[in-house]
Length: 601
Image (tube, rainbow, N blue to C red):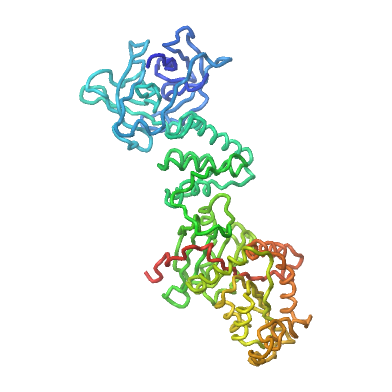
């Protein structure tokens, strides 16, 4: 305590209390000490620097204390009426949980009870880390005798024996020999009422510059609110896959998320991760490699997509009942967001209510990919046209890169293995060829299967919806073709609607299985050359649109096509208006796992 000149005596009318200097001209005290400030001046004096005399002060921050002993917010920040900072070193702070870390340390306060204008000391300790009513730590005297906490100690700093501050005394609970107790506000609660305090409190294990760096970054982010940095995603990135979940309702601001990480999350690496990630988003110092989230594992250095998965399956409870599961993939792990059994008519509203929450689980700089894992008969569902929500009519396919995939294929060990190998080849190349399945093709399913295998097909395009090409479409689902594209609407055109589909040339004839060969009239052969066929026109436009696009980028490219179609003067006439994309890279889903929800429970 020797040389701690920052202890202050606060007077306002007939009320005397304590306070402590935290900057060159700001002090902390209790709001009830200055409750008469409207009628009487507030004066501050420093018993260790009497030459400064009494200095006037004004209340610049009030914690909202309403007047009763048990009302919260008994905090006031005073500003001295001086032109320059006073020549006293302000108080130093300890990490916020020091007062209630075992073994509980002795705490000392400098107060001004009756007849002690020069001040006196009281010794005490915290009873427990448990807050009373979410606000106070309870105190008990260090010995059964000595100076109790009484009037005049309100606003005093609770300090460690080395002089570092861990809280502020607010009340005495009893002064009889049998009851010598009091209460104090710990540093994290004080910062709740005066956020500026957070910048002055060190973080255990970090240097003094780290908190200042964080709050500098927060001020930069607040100056550019249009940047759209999501506090919920930053929080989840900081705490890692096994950290505390988002509090109900999430965070209204980056500052609220940062404070929660700082005061409420026990992981000592969470705050540095939050700071580093925010710096990276703002173009500052990038994240440090040794601050990875705990147990964060990734399967490969493959595509950068971070999927939000909507998986729909038959529930077993009735023909109209389905199970809907929404989850987010992060650091190679699936994070469940919600699961519910619903009638088919309720699926869209449920998905709309959960998509935003799922996206919040992704890393702040992740490229989100909304993936609908659907039963086969749902694959033509217009999920890309579902609105984002009741208050946002943007189609999901125009708000996110959005794909579908077949549920049976998604969970097939054979298909996942074969598709991984296919993607490893595709990662080294650029655009790929579209293997066309023409309108009215006479190609049999076995012939198409052979053509797709022989051609090592990365992408198959269908001229008509699955309802018009069911046997051939199902071949595409059971061969490891990573990408399938088709128009959701339309029927065989007048030119081809009567074309027999069961006839085909011998598949063992010379040239069988090659595009345009005698065994593949469905390749670049006769039906394709008929310009009056809408299916042929669709495949021509599709082939040109994806010619130079790497398969890994197709979800983003198809989103661009959807935006273009939506913005057209006649959207329904645009060739990509009803384009459906089945895109399947199992490396984005390293663990498909079991169902999140018992279908009939």
